[in-house]
Structures are given as structure tokens and as C-alpha cells.
Image (cartoon, rainbow, N blue to C red):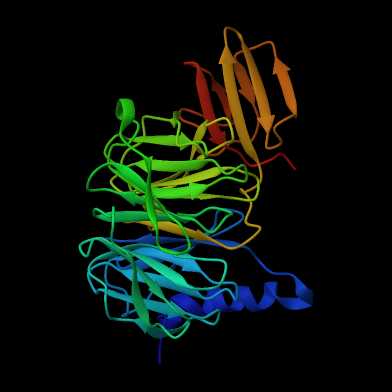
Length: 342
């Protein structure tokens, strides 16, 4: 049995132990850093910790089971490794995989892998024994997501389509590249209303599809969007592989920078979040209209109207801001993370 390198993992294990006392538990989400062979862990305050292991070989897909164990697909290693909640690592699967990307669990606890160069979806039981689940309609599969009815959706990067596969393995076409709606589809995720969100890696957009496969543009001007997940407040997190960053989009699609290469991101791909993970506190959304600014200090209905284009407060990541942290708005929309005043 191997483990995460001790000098990087001990602090994480200590935090998990402390936060598990009296039934309380810290919430985290994890990001696969493909280019640095590491996993980045973020807590609900936005603090990050780098997790490393000799078992990681261009990690791509991530998935958490119901017990909190983390599964990692190694793209170049053609393996899936498992890390328990104490950071201990064991090999999980090493056969039937040819450049695996995303991972996803079904409701029964079986693990599915997008077999990119094998043009298949592989299904693994709890012992890591795999079988081919689907091949029909699969073309360089990348992203995976289950809906509430146990149907598996697959992003076909090779032909710009989304395939829908029922629990028996029967496949039907769900969405195609209508009016450029799919352009290098990568990550997939469902919201609580059964809408499917697709990261268009080549197109730099997030597309939203209803249950009938009708698509609308949700967000644009992204750089290589790859992985997606929703937090418990329905904020959408997007990893940008080529920009080494993570962007958070609020329910209206407005973005702000959550993390970048300074947080240890090197080619971030797929993400996995523990249940109940919420956006870090103190998010400020600013909409500038003429000489007025609407401020939102983290709760969607809590607005303050100012009669001046200058906004005072304690800010972080505000371009051009200086003590006493006053920033004059320019442009139409600015979105920043803030530190709430004490």
C-alpha cells in the first residue's frame, strides 16, 4: 500500500480529523492537475492544498464514492487508483483502459470510465473488475454524467455529440452540434432541475441542454473549459485546462476567478466535490449601469444601491484597487471575491 507524500498529506489528514469531531466535517472539492501529476484540494473558504503521489500519471478523471474515497483516472498510466479518507492509496483497476478521462458512479455504486482511445465506456464493480458497458455511438468519449433516472450521458469529443445510455447499455443520440452548440465537448454535469451543462473545450463556452436536448448558451469567453461541478448553492465551477484556472459562475452565469496557477493548478481537468460543498463566503457581484452600482454580498437577494460608481469595502483580487480598497467601476459587469468587513 502506498500513500500520499507525508509532508503534503499530514496537514490534510489532520484537518479531516479535527473537522470530523462531534459529527462535523469539513467540505472539500478536488481538481486533477494533469500537467503536474497532482490533485489540488480546496476547502469551503477557498484554501488549497496540493496532494501528490507516485501513483499519479497525468490524472484526469475524479470521482468520490459514498464513503468519501477518491478515485482517480490516470490518463497516461491507463489505470484507476483509489485513495481512502486517510490518504492511503491502492490500485483499483488496470485493465480495459486506454487513455481514460472522466469517471462517474451510478446509484448502485458501480464506477464508469470514459475510455477515450478505446471508444468505449467501461464499468467496474467494487472490486475493480471491469466490463465493457457501451461502445455503440461512442467516439473519443471524455465527459460522463448520470441523470436522476440512472441514464448515463457521454460527451463524444470526436464527433461533437452527446450520447444518452440507459441502465441496460442501450444508446441513443441526445444532442448534436446544432448552430455550434457543441464544439469539443468535454465535462458534463446536471443541475438540480435536470438540465445538462456541457463544457465546450474548443468553443470556449458552457452550453445548457434541457431534457429534450435543446441547447442554449449559458456562458462564453472561457479558455479551454474542461471540468464542471455544482456546489450546494447552485454555483457552477469550471476548470480551464489551458488557462490553469478555475472560474465560478453564479446561477445567472456571471463569473469570477476562484483559483489560478498560483494555487498550484497545472492543467486542471475534472473535479469532484463532497456533498454539501458551498461557495466560499463573501462573494461580491457588481453590476455597473451608468453611475450606479448594485452590490451583492453573497446572498442573491441582498442588494445595496449606491449613487456613485466608486465602491468602498475590503476587497481582494480587485484590479487597480489600493488602500482603502476603493475601486472605480468601468465596463458593464465586474465580479470579484471579497473579504466581508468585520
